Image (cartoon, rainbow, N blue to C red; front, top):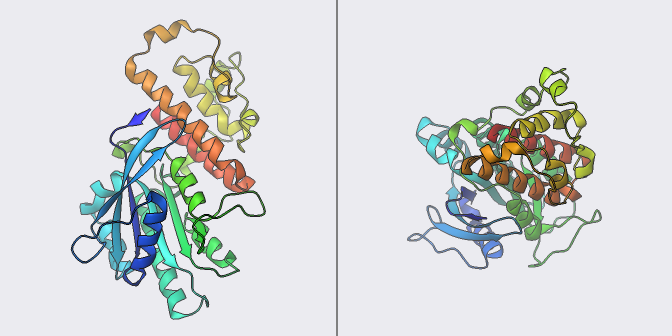
Length: 319
């Protein structure tokens, strides 16, 4: 599937980290970004993404920040609403300080905190159907503090060392730029309407009906048992109930085979009533679930559950 008008990535760094931002863009795209006049701020660069599920030329908007608090205020203003609505990714680039309590460390935390504020208040935090990465450039050994700090703000921390090609950590997970690319590839870059942007992560439980006995779920008790464990993705069964009902209502009785990695073998009379828009919605849904499942396979269980709940909620919104 070719995504002709994908959402955008906003990549930012402090003004004194221009060289790190330029290096990250080069490592991600294969080319150095071209400056607008004498600065990278305001320039754009394309990232070519090609997976088994889609191809897209995703524009990356570059920005340099002198005052993180003022930058956050401007992006949370009503005038910036249209900009936030077209974002599908946000990347922070900063230099990992040798001493976390140094002036450099304090400046990095201020940057991350204010960009995280925009993610939470402007984009919806955990319920945002986008990807938010925090790339720390440097070779320090202990990055647990930075991982925790970023995670508290809804950002995934990725350490980028001096090696152009980095391997995997002790858990078999990709590291460095390959991990950043993996996260970007797993994202849904299709344009969504402003109404699809969620509020807070806790609202997802209400959307999924977790902890509630739903009549809708009783209705389809004789339908196919879409087993969340078969996804090997960290779903709880109650998380999946709402998604199953949404799929059932859309007239898809054979999604179990698809989600298990097998082609559908049955037919459904309701399929005849599906128009092109319905088919495209279901196609996007399956592509998104498959891509998210594949990419999050190496994540810790708790994080996989969060990603799973987020993916289910976004698919339900489409249906």
